[in-house]
Each structure stands twice: as C-alpha cells, then as structure tokens.
Image (tube, rainbow, N blue to C red; front, side, top):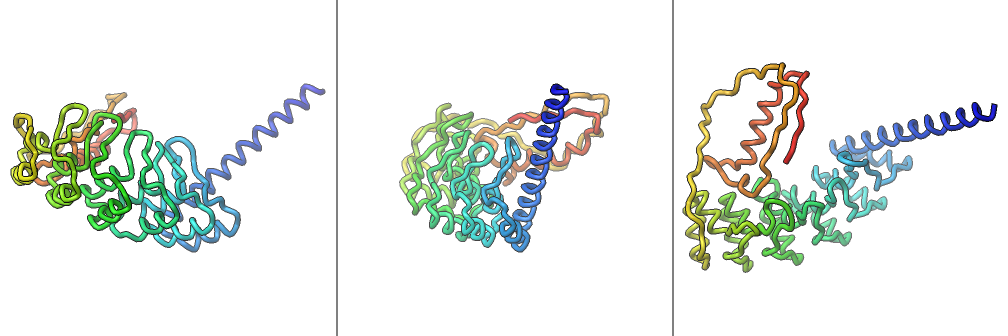
Length: 301
C-alpha cells in the first residue's frame, strides 16, 4: 500500500510539473507573439495579470520579451517592458542581449536611446565573440541599421578598431567588413574615425587585400589614399549566372541531407551588387521546398 501511495505521489508531481511547463511555454509563446506583432494592448494586459517581463525560453528558444521587442523595433513595447522591470542586459540565446539586437536593426535612434538611458551595456559580447559594435556594422551592410544609428553608438564610446574575437573571422575589423561589402560610405566614415587601414585579421586578411580579392577598384583607391599598403594578389571572382535554371525536383529517396552555410567574412562580398550571404539565403529559400517531407535535413554553419 505504501509503495502504491509513493508511486501515486510521484505520478502526481510529475504530471503537475509537465502541466506547469506547458502553461509556462504557452504563456511565453503568446507573449512573444504579441511583442513581435507590436500588440501593445495584449502585452500590457498580460503584464497586468502577472506576466514576468523577464520571462524567457530555454535553448534555441531562449528569446526574451525585451530582446524580441528590440529585434522587431517595437519602441512602445520596449518602454513598457522596461517600466515593468525588464532587465535591460538580460542575455538570451547564444548570449545575445537587447542592445545587440537593437544595434543590428536600428533604422532609427529611438530604441538605442531608450536602452542607453537604462544603462544598457554597449560593450557586451555574445558566445561567438560578436559585440554590439559588430552587430551594428553588420546591420549597416545589410541595410538594417542606419549610418545615423552607427554614428550614435560610436559616439557612446565604441571602438571602431575593435575586431571579432572568435571563429573564422577572428580579428576582422569593421573596415574589413566594409571592404568586403564594398560599402564606400561606411569605409569613409570609419577612416574618418581613425580606423586602422592596415590592421590584419588572424588569417592575414586586411581591408586592402579583401578589396583587391573582390576587385573593388573604388574601395582599393580609397584605402590606398589613406595609407593602406599591403594587399594579397587578386583572385578570380566567380560570377553567378542569374539566368541559371533552378535544380530539378530533388528525389525523395534521399534520406539524409546536410546543408553547410559558409559564415566567414567573405560571404559579405558582393556578386553583381548583391552580398553573397543574401544570395545564399535566397538559394536556400528556393531549394528547401524542393525536398520531400521524408528527407531529414541538418544545418551547420
């Protein structure tokens, strides 16, 4: 009898735990959806009913409410969450903070100024060694962040010569990314702020060697004008034929497929005026529907 009673108690506690986790997950999902949509009224009502403004998921779903609001540019919801006690520096999946997300999607200054006023850490670095400044630079070259926003962040004390700390792009500076993207305005601004035109990444890349590799004549001239001296030999730039036919329907007898995306700095280089990373995304978007449902797909970077 005692054994059965203990089993019942264990079962009751286990099912209660699952029930609570389900409620938690549902609440988080609903809250994040409301934040993403900019549904201020729903978010406010959930907070009034006891929603923790610092609620977040786990693992790959570790997206906090404030991080989501910053990512989507929901200015009023950012203000609401902070007024209800949201942690301005709460890190989410892979160590990303609200300021990192805001910096990478700052078409206006509104959210950046709000976060700065709340003492957000502008020097934070995520688990991959990517900083707030790196996110802002990548935002500029992908047209998600305005030059005005970048200049604002630099004015807060960010170092234009700060380089990435880990991975294949270790040692890459903002000027190297500008060179890879052939972003003349960005490169000109960085140089005006004393960016080191001769800095080298761990693998030996420099802004000039990158521009030379990509055959960006205007960028090469700009860098040399400001003292860049060393460049690697030019490499042939492979051109992509925009008229190339899409692959035929992929047979469903393929059971396992691994897709590997090159996340190195070279992917910000351009082919016919378009960043390679964008081309890769478009190819994946067109390719994935071609796989049958019986195919197991894994993804690696």
